[in-house]
Amino acid sequence: MLPSNSSNPPASQKTYYLTTPLKFEDIQKINTGDIVYLSGAVLTARDEAHLRIMEFDKKNQPLPFDLEGAAVYHCGPVMEKTKSGWHAVAAGPTTSDRMTKMTPTILDFHNIRILIGKGGMENIAETLVGKCIYLSYTGGCAALAVDMIQSVNRVDWEDLGMPEAVWELTVKNFGPLVVGIDCHGNDLFGDVKTKAKKRFLEIAGK
Image 1 (cartoon, rainbow, N blue to C red):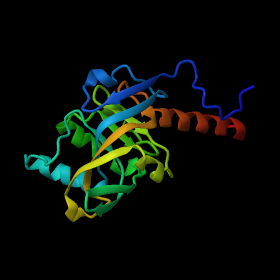
Image 2 (image 1 turned 90 degrees about the vertical axis):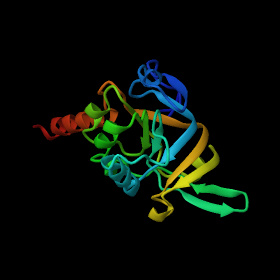
Image 3 (image 1 turned 60 degrees about the vertical axis):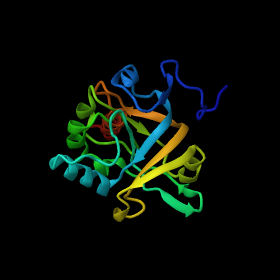
């Protein structure tokens, strides 16, 4: 008998290998609970980067990086600069919910196809419909993530500080990433919260 923490996926769960840049068709068939391994260019962006992107968009200024078909990673990496260039020391996910309020506005301007982070993004499933999916990466795996980063290609907005700057990384089979929110309005995190609340009320006898 398999232990309860077996890595064997349920029959309905599918695994996808994607490479950026992405078209909507690349993510359209993916559902919550599926697994994604991502290759290609990934851009890191935290709170300050999101705010600056919005400022640029408001002024119709071009961004120094390309968000068309992009994967945006909610991450404040630790980098080391050597003679050969920048190298990632740690690159774990940050809490995505901090970016929730800014994301709808950014998606109005840019065809971002994948968001990556941890903890989910509350009440954003409707915003992602027909546009984007949210992938969850396990927190506490900052060092492990580095093994999947092949190179650090560039950095923009260094004035924001190392963790808040936008770093372009080339990754290879970055994952496993769990699809927390798909582009059809399904939210795995929201479903879990709803079921947990229902179960709590049942136990409480309400």
